[in-house]
Image (cartoon, rainbow, N blue to C red):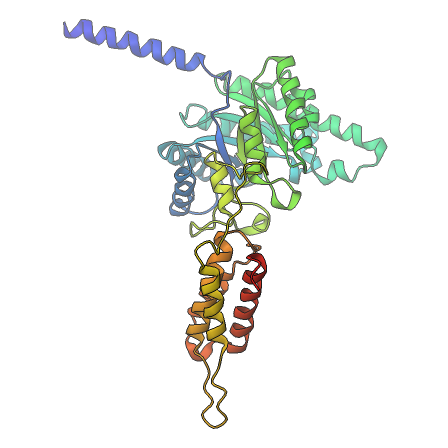
Length: 408
């Protein structure tokens, strides 16, 4: 009986394992809710950062690899990569490694002489992690045409250089498939208009979108969808969202959901070179814009003027009370011989009252929230606070509250 059960379980396992293999590459990647990540820092930092991502139900990361870093310490580099993929899998994330980066493209890598080095690097990386359960797919090159080699080319040179890059990609796509016949391959093109040259070789059509209008974002999706349909391939947006490119996180995520498309935001942590324009979380777990996190969770800002209900901070008279508190806090004792001044604590209490009304009703810019300035002053010893600046700040908040609530 035990033998029959063991055989039966073995058959079930074999069928399950076979079907799991047969499922890859997948026909649909719309379940991917990912984020681009630098894979920087020690184990503690990586687990902290991925912990933030897990809290908002993200499930995949797209990471940059480097042949230069690999060549400096091949074994150490592979161990770090394998550790990252296993850590990510344990925390609930799949991984899309990027083998080459078009953004910092060295034209010498396109020459035949580089193939020996390139092949050794690709072979070592692919064979080392191809059987890792956390591996989602291979991105052969990130944004192949976004670099100085193409950008600074003359009109006569441009097509030739683009063809060189395409030839490089078309060489490595089948090589990776030969080394790993199971996992999908893709190319992270920066525009959906660039997908055609390798669409026949990739398993998944992936593009990036950083365009400025809903209409242009929709057009980018339409182009990618047309290519995906033409070649019978699934599609995904593997890099999107930038506040400096008029490509808001909440807008692009809503459009991706409408198109039932998987996505990777750029990027996870607000720090470093891209910190000014990208990112979900600060290293301490705070956020820049709660609307971004809301959108990641599938809840979007109401932009329908017919259904929008405008906040009324003074509905219960609290704007009036806040203005009275500001007026009282600004009143010093005018006595000639016993002149006294209000404490900065009283000024900050009145300012916070007004700030909480203004911020919660979204009645002021939040690039530097008043509450942040108030918190900064509160952390200082009273004798270290700039009282004149606090008075001016509190007075200004009162004016803004009065204007927004139309109080006279």
